[in-house]
Length: 370
Image (tube, rainbow, N blue to C red; front, side, top):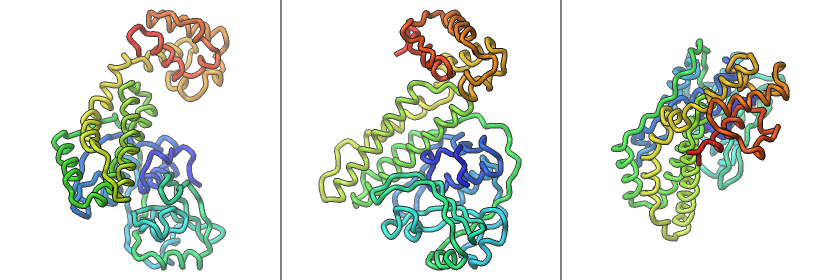
């Protein structure tokens, strides 16, 4: 089963199935632990151009460090009969070009992953990948195969790697961190800007910015999961990244059709990369909103007489101590704490039952917000 707690559209095609496996072993709290670090550390790829795409070894190291998944066995092209030797799932990495359930099938060569385990039909393939491509859409899926059908599928794969994991104890949720080297940004952008084969450069660069956007969305999701106040600057930076991805892809499609690439693409990406540290820094998040979320959470918890994390677990109406009288008390207490007066038109009952909505109400009312 693909865990619903894994927001698949935040991950790349290897991360997403590692996250799904971590949730199976450790529960929903493991779903977005891969987002605890936002690192810009490009390296020389398989070709000449640098890349931010993690290698398989780097993904497996991150799985142990962040997800509590330790590799106990890794084999290249093992016999098909060995794939279903255990009850639990194995992690398989191969070329998506040969996988019939993804849009890359017979269209594009790219590394991909899936989970494989025994089932009543013979074998079950789980793939949580979520993406829209020029060849079609990929969505999380589970596929049942008979053992002969699985053997035929595996036999068609020129190369595949099978990894078995053993769960390890997870520690406390790590503090979010951001690591960015401006010198690396300049070198990275210059490599793509100056590369002579413009089609190859922009094709690869469109994947690079897609990976960069997903990493930032995953990091933002992790901040929310840790109850860290997310700065307005970070939300606006995500919007800039979405615009970057669209512009780079448009430029690639133009060059692919032998038209001029869009001007100013590479300086734009360089500027956005350089803004990342200030926008996504956990310190910036707290300073930008003055600790609004923490204060709102503590205020609501105090009024309702419950622990702080409980008020963020869902709607306040789900809590036994919540009532219309408590709602009024929460509003009055927040006005006192933040020295504001909420406009009557903003006090809609349906907007007063979630901590996030109350935070937005405070932000919109503070004299320096906007």
